[in-house]
Image 1: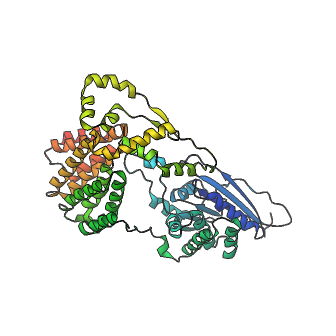
Image 2: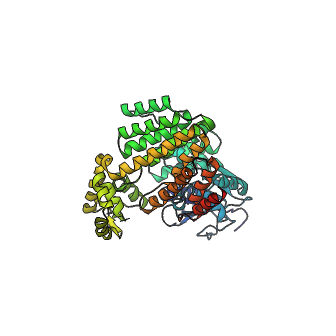
Image 3: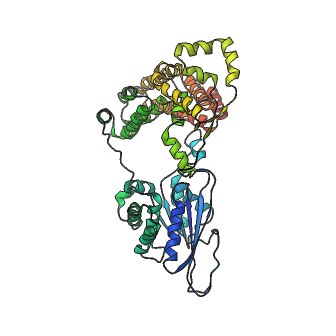
Length: 494
């Protein structure tokens, strides 16, 4: 290679379905039509959010000798890194693709949470602030903004926004028109992609700052939605509006408008005892955690989510199934006898669970899990029928049990709020322990109950710090070992 033929190495790290391949094709097209020899390769990742696909492009000005280009990026030898999500930018840094003296790092600052983050007992999210700091420190230049929100605003896809950011960065020796020509040459959704490209270009150059802000909440258009929105604005502090609006939306989807009204009634009870400290933190946390508890995952909810058309469409998109390809989805389900009985009318379900003989005879039937093909007519109809039980959910044993637990939790918070608002808020936050269904739900509920029982055993004398420490101990492991140790320490100290 001669000095006047400078090779350019570009790595694109993207998740499935984000158009990383399209972006790589545009970059190859860009170089090939502007006097460069270009080559693109890819190394696919594993499943969604357990690994990204790395697209690698090398280009070199055309010359008398045919160049030999590499197939994969080499740490310390990459000129431009483009990441479709903040954690992917962090992965690029850890893998050595980003160097302070050479690499221009272009990355979206939004998050798509990994499986390990979503399955953690508590808040398992990785620190975005640390990644942003590293991106600024370890790259020659860092261009970062919320490209996902910007693509939503323009009605485009994130790959076109990333391509615009690449053009706006000035890291490649091509004019804007050459980038736009590559999009046109692709021949797909040209106008939409050009809109996303233009927004990404301007954002990379420091313009159109309002475009990178989060997409604002859309005011509802239905009469019921407008009424809920007005009630939230009238009765709740502004800091709680976002959670309350999402809570109403979630509970209307979960049950119905009357259930959403119950949510706001309960929330108003917390608001009435909130002293407004820390920007109404008690009401704000109650808005979030009450919605989560009221939308507990019973067998009806699980069945409903499994047979939704949107879920089948999402899975087809994730596995890149063509329109003429058949898709089969097999789920692993393990409903216990308790879950089955809790789906029955309260009286019948309680009678079965309280009968030692009936429970002993029925338990073996639900000892093992089942592989359920939700795309088969048999299982689709069975789950659809179960999902239709939503209209009778209020009569089920599980509904009766959960509503009693919720009322006890809220009643305790209201009682404590008058003398210690901070403690009341910590008790509200204990709902974080309760999540999922089956064994996961049982473990979380057990930890929650142990903390509440200990608080009551202390005659209400525990302070906010103590409850907070017990909650964090419960979140430390699934087996409750840390919580047991924390409770024993508290027992010795009291």
